[in-house]
Amino acid sequence: MTVCLTKSLILAGLALSGAAFAQTAAPAAPAPDYTLSFNAGVVTDYRYRGLTQTRHQAAAQGGIDFAHSSGFYVGTWASTIKWVKDGGGDAPVEIDFYGGYKGTAGAISYDVGALRYQYPGHDLEASPNTTELYGAVTYSMFTLKYSHAISDLFGFDDSKNSYYLDLSAAFDLGNGWSLTPHIGYQKVKNYSDNSYTDYALTLGKDLGNGWSASAALIGTNADKALYRTVNDKFAGKTMVVVGIKYAF
Image 1 (cartoon, rainbow, N blue to C red):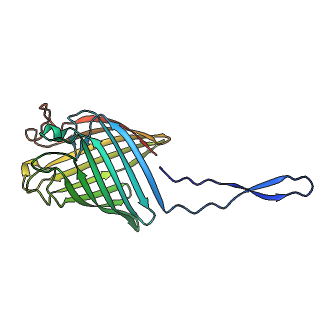
Image 2: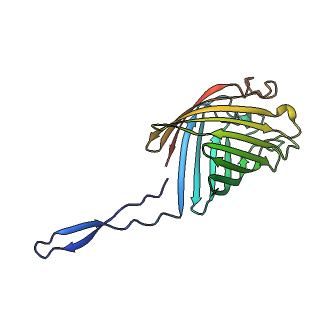
């Protein structure tokens, strides 16, 4: 949701001969110091770093973001999930909390912050709750991001200091269309067999009035024996994921 600025009409003068009003636009108000935005959407499969979180089924998602003109920001995002319940726990929702700072240095923009993944009521012996620090740099259409776990990673015992490295690009195709290729590498410390590469190619379309749609080809080279869903499907298989989102 953006803060809207409206132009107001003011009374400029009264003609002595006929009481006619002349109207002029007031000076524009200064830009707001902050923005508060919301988003909600659905996807045919919630994929995180290439792996399904919903057993290759649909998910509902939404978030709230607050950004200050100084560059600081905070936000929260949530999605329905299935993998915790499939693992014997009881958390139908993932809730993320994050905050950081965005700035520029010449032609380069950067983003640093912290992200907490929370699974309320998970009831698992090994907690899936995870905290990461991240940093990203963007030059032209390319973005390189590094995320470092300062806790155990999503329930892997003794996996602190795992990391994720991600390279993406954003191409404007015109008329509201965009193309975003991505490749990432997830390193799970002390679990070399669980480390893997993921990839995606996303076609996006701005539908106007806050609506957008996407279709993404997503896959991984993760170990098929280690990453299985409860219905014995490969969690990182290559497939197309479609989504629609409304931002306001």
